[in-house]
Image (cartoon, rainbow, N blue to C red; front, side, top):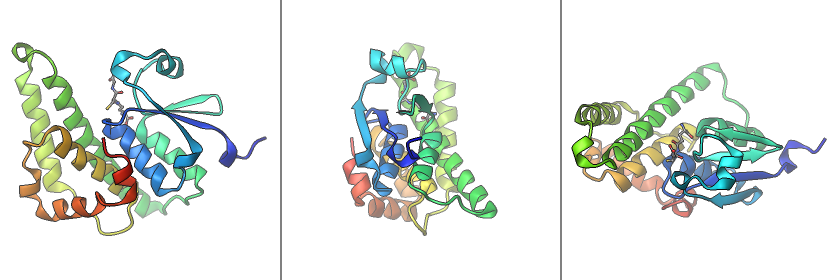
Length: 198
Ligand SMILES: N[C@@H](CCC(=O)N[C@@H](CS)C(=O)NCC(=O)O)C(=O)O
């Protein structure tokens, strides 16, 4: 059997996708990016090579050892295993899962807003846009300012906040959380974030 570290990995991604960026930032941080065959696709156009890999036609999708992994967190957890990063102990693992969940939800609410706004204005569901907006505001107010290593929780949060700046600049999260804004400005200068900017 070929050792896991040598198995080929093909990553379907789209540069503006915050979910795909999260995977790519982690791959850079782990020094694994050269191990990935990167395939840039626009999922909204249903490219045949993406459909062949996943019926969901979503990015990110990682094909490895004849298996397609979808869901950015599952892909990241696989990359952490490939890199040999030990799983945190129980308490830290719960805290990490909670931080990933909050930041991922922030991406979901932001991405959902962007998609809803792509519909013709007369069919906008304003109640839904407002609900997502409230979730964004509450979540930004709630997240802790990271202080430690740039782990998957922090990477997910950085991708979420950078996506707000990129696609929803009218959300005044920086004014509400100057501490978080300073942190993002700091991590935005990391090589992994610079290399994955859309
Ligand atoms: N929960 C998934 C979300 C993936 C996702 O929604 N990706 C978007 C790109 S930002 C996509 O491919 N959308 C195409 C579609 O929904 O058809 C993850 O964490 O990977």
